[in-house]
Image (cartoon, rainbow, N blue to C red; front, side, top):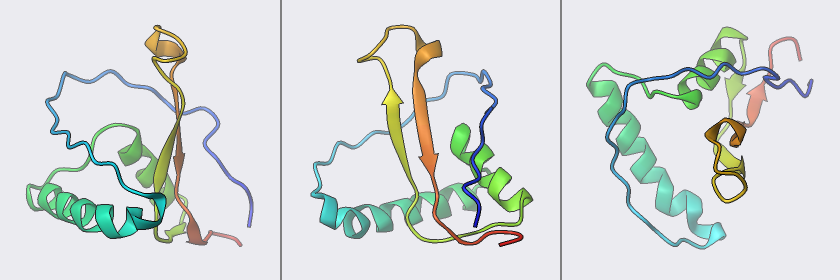
Length: 106
C-alpha cells in the first residue's frame, strides 16, 4: 500500500455557519465508546436532511471515494498549527487521517 496523501489541498471560502459545540474531557481509551454514537447520530441527522458535511472532511472523503479506497474505522484530525502558534489563519494547518482497509491498486 502506498503512503498516498493530498499534498496540495484546496482551501475555499464559505459563508459563516453556526455550529453546536459540546466540551467533553474523555480519556483516550474511551474515545470510541463516547464519541462513536454521537458521531453516528450526527452523520445520520445530516444525511436525513439531504446535506453533506462542509469543509475539508467532505473534500477528503470525496477524494477517498473518487480514488477507489475503502475506509476502516476511526478517523481523526490533528491540529498541527493553530491560533496558539500564529494569529494569521493562513498559517493554521490541520492534518486529516483516515485508515484504509483497501487501497485501489494495492
